[in-house]
Length: 301
Length: 311
Image (cartoon, rainbow over all chains, first blue to last red):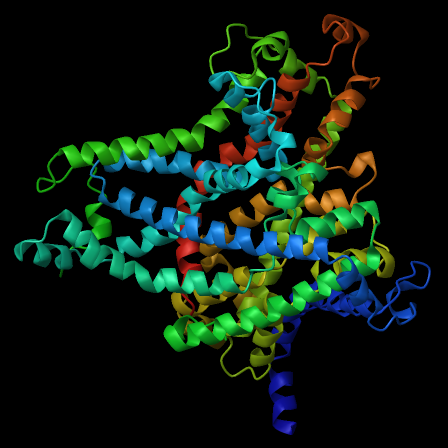
């Protein structure tokens, strides 16, 4: 203990350097964790978080009472996670390999610059771009096809619309990481394969793809920890938080945001948030455990 | 020594071995199609902003409008004071937040990377926990508004995005792997104190990593609409993204504003150029990032790669 204190005193300058981030994390991240007790309280604005009376598990009874909503938002959160991860990973890898294989390097470089642009556009702006394509009377799609589909009234079309929007926004940027792995492959491997008579497809199949597998595994496993969290902007802004579309578009995060603005269903929202955080923690621990088994040097802790 | 693939890709002409083939042409066309898919919507924003409003109402949005007009752009430029204020708020939050974040995160990363510092293990765990577990939006909202009473404060636009675990890890990895420890020891032997060593030796050497992290942070600040929507009420504190979120209200409010000369309103025939003005606003909001991005591209690609390798 004395050792520890004298070590800390010796490094007092480092303690001072670490202090600002420590304080920001404490007040911005740690204190709100205690807000999760709201799931077991009957929140009263005048009494504050800690002064509000305990409610036991009443809030969770709400959750069971309105289980249709709860099941819907949880199901949507999970389904979109699966779709986005599967389609996203496939396209990121495909694009990285395609760019890597293309021999017109100068052109692909320019094309890549254009492909990355959408990731920098906020969803608040993206929603107007989506609107320009799917609005019922002025939209490009309806005009091109001569139809009059009312996209904003038709919930069944939205899984496709959101997936396409997500692909548009993230694929160019997502492939950069895989491209950096491809750039590191030793060219001797390809040359040796060529001497052995391998054609282009064989080289991709036996050299390029296997070299990407560790990165793909790590990215997939780490994403497991974020299953319960979604891209709020996509589900809140792009859908214009429209009630007609909730059955296929509302996820936990956009539900909570909506509830905060409408000041509604407080107990239900608190219970849902609690559920989201706890399941998120368990999944994160599980994902890290898996990474540790498969690729120990990539584990988070 | 073998020539790495990266060097080879710097030769811009096709190499002798890889001849033009049908496969290459097909691949190139596929890439071109995907590029168009990514860029066309961005282009549509620019075209629509300069399309005549009546044309949009009658024929819909189009890449090749027959009638152009500056009315949308004019409407935005005549926002006057509010646009100016929002720009100032966004620029302030972005610049101040990014600089503050970079400074304090590199300080923390530096402290964490000192080898015989016993507390560094605690610092690492303290940094990691928020990545695993957090209170979620609702707790954050209640704590910030009813415990800290920070509603309508610019602090809530700055602090929540200021520190991120991933960014500290990127900076720490860079310090450990790319800055020789001997350099810092030498400075100490020459009599520099801890602070001086950090600010005059480590911080300047961190530049490439700071550029990468800084650009990503700046983009996150610039694009943040959620905190603004949750916490900001006063017009004088509204950032650009909030103008976009409330665009319908914004355009009406701004056009009815006293700053708009009566002559300008009369010139628009009293009608608000809804669609083209919206797109023009989108340009005003996303423009600066589009302009800055090509200059930072090489840095953030590097930063992304560094971050993926844990030191």
